[in-house]
Length: 374
Ligand SMILES: CC1(C)CN(C2CCCC2)C(=O)N1c1ccccc1/C=C/C(=O)NO
Ligand SMILES: [Zn+2]
Image: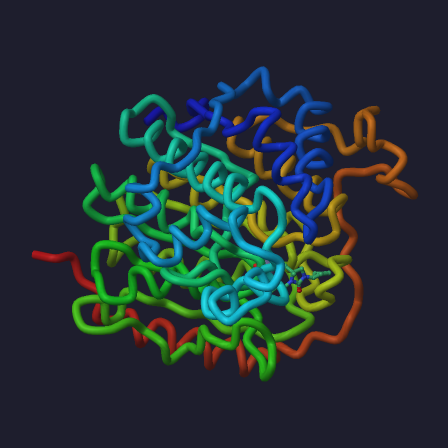
């Protein structure tokens, strides 16, 4: 693949944007993201690819029949049934409410990430972007953490139709539990998640000691981190872990979930990252010149999330962005600085050097046993 100008496709149409904008937990985020990327004229460097609904067969490639048929028939449920035991059994309560059109939206997002995978296995694109995707918590038979269909798993399964070894990288503040579970017993997909890990923080999984099972042992990598994490620390542990993974696993394709809820200014108030650290992570991964899917995920300060994903999009198309936010519909919300950067705070950092070194040595030790399937 040519090292500089890569063929980038961008999953989008008005339908998926409108459907995602109606999701109660991230209302209107999709339009804010899309509008900034458009305002920076980045679409002239990418091919826009329309998503499609994931087929039932594709959904059943990961999710259970019971769960999918329940999701497909939500409209037939009475109000009581929507709050009943069965809904609860499928996780469709609290943070995963049954809302009108939620299945159509989730399966369109799933089809979007599958389409991203298709563009890569058909060698039509080098990088495929789906900022509507990245819903990494959905389990085989239940919704979780506002994730209903695990589009990430579906995209990885699509890539596995051509690529022998696929690497999944999760940069979201939260542990990518649904994706890790899906591939914890195989050595064909290595999942690595960098996330906040502390008592009572959702989803509660992702300990450094969780390294996978049976043939997948050592092919699950967890890097648990603490509140206040700063750019330099994040990038240092990211590079040192990822260079090891590159050498020992030698991935043929990559999926990177770029959840932006670890940024300073996010309501999650956890990490203290700027968009530069996520940008350095993505830039490093793209420098490997492997077919790559970039996905969205968390990110609840919508302006910061838009800045982050516009910046990451600019790295994919290798175009420098002006520091000044261009005039567009949401310009007024970018005050008071109206700049692309996200200023980091000076909140106390719970990640001591000792802690980070301890985690690093444990992760490297865990990975010593990763070897190519001879
Ligand atoms: C419901 C939302 C998704 C939104 N939200 C906040 C952010 C600020 C105002 C609402 C949460 O904490 N959520 C959650 C609630 C329960 C479990 C998980 C999550 C988030 C998961 C996530 O981001 N994974 O990557
Ligand atoms: Zn998150």
